[in-house]
Image (cartoon, rainbow, N blue to C red; front, side, top):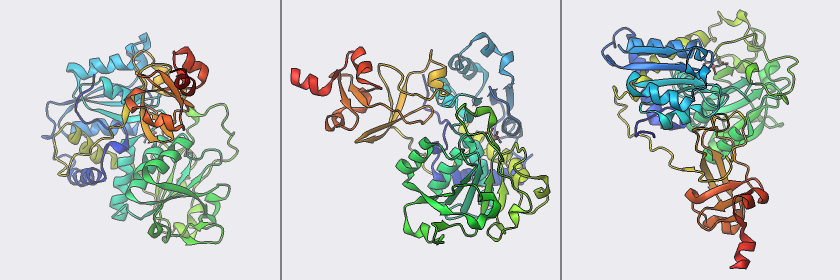
Length: 450
Ligand code: NCD
């Protein structure tokens, strides 16, 4: 399994310096889109799209063709052996053999790209995995901000719409936090950022959600509980004035709108009475005077056509820029350009969960949908008390008991004795009964018996 090659599964797979270097390369490619056909001749990219796509697939394929490479496409997976029950792991093993030099994968299950990367002999690009991440859309979005605003550090970005299921938002928010942008969330009520995303922002990027006063955003934020995501540094806070009711949103640099991801809604989601909408009227408030309007597209009614000709609307330009940034991504992963910065040292805190039940409870995680090939894998977020996330979908692993595979004792996740378990010996249990069934004795009793 696996190779030492770079994959692009999460936006965290790239350092900020690498991301900025990709922007420089994309800019160079954009200046002469037809002038780089000698970068990837003889190389082939395979598009494996288990979900619909217009921009992502076509811009990747255009990018590969413009670099002088070739493209294989499986865009209707019902016409492939997937419909005969072939697993993603097997498909990837075959396609990454002699068929292709890079795989661009879109899949409905969260964590699919991480699984694919484990089985692929060539780089895997995550072109969207369920509602989890969409790192190349984020690179496109950041590239747009960098071109339009000249920087990302310290700019004020408002995120609106369905923040719960939009994978573009999740990758974007991690990257914005790392760049030190100021983020204001004005979600559609009931579609706030998921808990696991907020947790990750807290744990890894020291970002705390603070209630924001978004009255200056006018009708857009009328029904929303606006939240300001702040890196805990005082100089960041000073960019916002205290409006008495919380941090007031002042001048906005970019407003990022998203559609309702209806295809991902679950039974317990609030019915949507009236979805947020942007039109000339909403955009007439002073705080949005200079804000560029962005959208990953496709849009439905959340951006009215009367805004299309507004100079602040950049969503079509944003989509066009998907080609040069994807040329840079492919050329980098295929080792045809040098980013000129040290390679990002990747997070090594991934451990296989050696035995027992799969501890991930997220029903849309690849570890639950493709059980034949998935080895439960987790990321340790904190040692005391123990906090771990599923390495595929990033959801928190809720496990009150953590076993040690060498002593076969089960410890409470927040007990002092649990501190001694080596991460590669940890196994997670939802209950004492589950631990006992796997042959793990509760730590206290086991200690008394010895
Ligand atoms: C997005 C996606 O597929 O997540 N589209 C895209 O890649 N540009 C956004 C969406 O479908 O709403």
